[in-house]
Length: 65
Image (cartoon, rainbow, N blue to C red; front, side, top):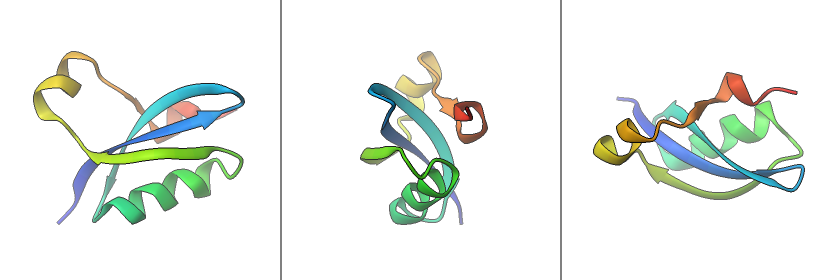
């Protein structure tokens, strides 16, 4: 069962959030860290269905250099 998590990161001095599908929060954080090794993980939380629909986050593929 996969859930969607929002991962807050700091990338090159700028805050950003990405949405990741994963089994749990640790795997979501590791997916982001694998894609962007120099990013700092600030937080990981479950997706807020109502709020995140109004203000969608980027997906992991949109945060590439």
